[in-house]
Image (cartoon, rainbow over all chains, first blue to last red; front, side, top):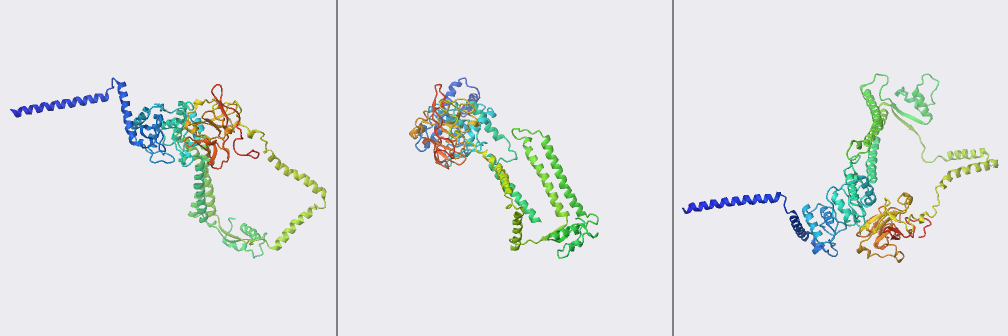
Length: 261
Length: 358
């Protein structure tokens, strides 16, 4: 009798547990997929969570140079208060930050952070105050022709006519635009990373920035006549290749003909 | 020439007394060899590659076909060139398209055509024409003293023959007639020399002229973010064109933190407007646009010869071949809030020139 009772109670408990599990799963699925009726509150909560997550990431990866509260450390890293989300996205998504060591220039490398983590870092930096520039959402490609004119006037002096980059002083350089995404190009113009001048919206309007991006990206997509771009820096490497290979080939041919006769 | 045979070799011997040109038995090759012999050239070996009297051998036919193929290839490639050039309505298209093949195909067709001619001729010469070795004696070093005395006399005698010493009228006439001919050759060079007048000392900027962008729009202080630069031109007709190629100016908006570090000669104390500084974009070394601005290290770089200018020290040269500072343009803001130049540059812009006061 006692045994029987125990068995029934166990059975009831098991059923209850299964039901509970099913309900929790269903509820979890619902909250995960159904649009929240209180989206405002949730996004505010998300922001808070995002800022908190960004703070944690900042304190792990950035604090040693940029200091507590991102106020900067003398001779190590500048204050990040007010630099804006665009700057964070540019520096972190291009892998320039975190910096492996202090040197002439931070170089592009694979990013150590996921897009979500970058967004969290950006949210944290934004939360510290200051109206920093942000990158607009949506399509960042504009009028290619206008972009070409603006590129040649404003960008080509350092980045080269075909965006291949070029040398600056003391080991610094203007990087090649080959790997830059639309958002990174936009952010770079807006924030002026490292030694690049800042091109604010009053000087180069958002539409003009999009035009420049369209031009810079279209150059990359174009095909090189003859097959090889050879650095795409124009007539100097092309002439060198023609000279070395062309004249070299002619020399070999001459030697061959002379040897045969 | 093709009538020659190995048996004719002996007739080219320079030691023989020559051949009788009227002898009907003399062949064309005999005449060629005689001509060479009289010029001191000895044909020591002459052998046709194929016996031209018997029917063509298989090897000879094969070589003929190969040479013919070379010339046919040339013709086909040349027609292809003309066809591609004439009938392909080439137009640049963006991206990877057939248009990218236009120039390479023209080059390939022309290359094949020229190579075909070359290989055809080389093969013809090396495989079909007779083998020939000819020797001509040349003396070593200078001519003998005797030869030089004889040649010298010939030349001086020519001068004596004209009798120029006896005929002063002709001497004068020739001098008068020929000297201006030399002048005629030199005179056009004179036209290349032009007095630039005051142009080297002035630019398109004068007091009150606005600083405008390439599209002609004037610039307000708010337009430039701190740490930003803008290339500006004089706001006058043609100011953004090559007519005023000496005028492009770099307007720099320093960050506050950098602006407090500026140390400039008192001479230029009122040339800037707030944290805005305007410097000539023309490098003082060779006139390239020195517009590579490093906004952290505050240097302006010239891409041509790596001159560097310190923006916080009045753009004094700190590296490279440039020896003079970039001239500073005195600027202010007019009643409507747009940048203006308060006068022209105080020094000539750009590279040195002969009369430049240093």
